Length: 136
Image (cartoon, rainbow, N blue to C red):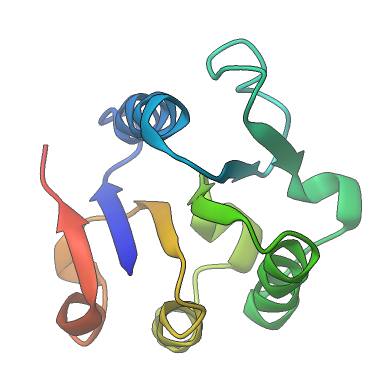
């Protein structure tokens, strides 16, 4: 299941993501992973959560991003929740590529939540056919 948290920059998406990470840390029977572009959330989420900065691995573009997420899932089959902050800064602003990326991620059969810094009206409509949107 893929969940997206959309909104313009500064609208509180990361705060909602952190709340969801904390809830998953409290409720999950497995492992929880959070991916961000740069190390900013160190003090906002529990130390039990595996925090990964994509910049440490040179991830750029949706193909590399998808491979990166697959590698994370492959190395730990006990992951129940995967959270990603700053999706467009990691993958880019090609919205058709974003839609294809999210469709492939949905096939991973993990609960994955992304923040997307863009107004919903500018994103491809097909994304909302297979992604759950968080409205806040």
